Image (cartoon, rainbow, N blue to C red; front, top):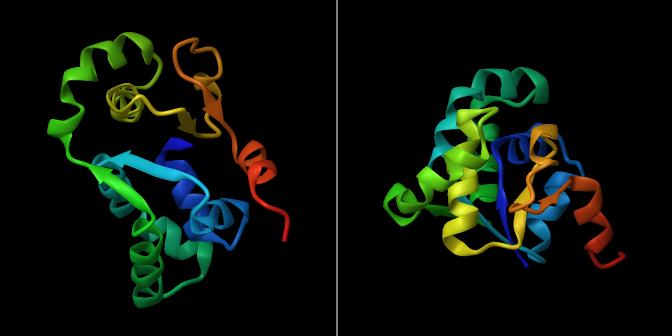
Length: 138
């Protein structure tokens, strides 16, 4: 199953060893995201360090390890879907790149816990709790 992972999902995985991190490292899903994801992580690094209690080196190492599990798409590979994504995501312009990637790659959906995605008919939404149930039992 190919899913677009949004910034909130990966930031949750960085902050603590949680279900979100388990999903990413499981290898059960093909995870993709726009290059914008890297900018979002960088923007919130101070917040992430404060919430996680990690130092800069430890944080950078964890980010690197988690991002190895995510295919980062350059803007050129989804820019033709931006107009359609803008029509779908009128609530939050920051979500447009994620929707555009989903449309461009014909992904199964978007992994997000953002509520404003729930009513989009063209985009299937997967929440962390749903994906955890799809993982093999340990």
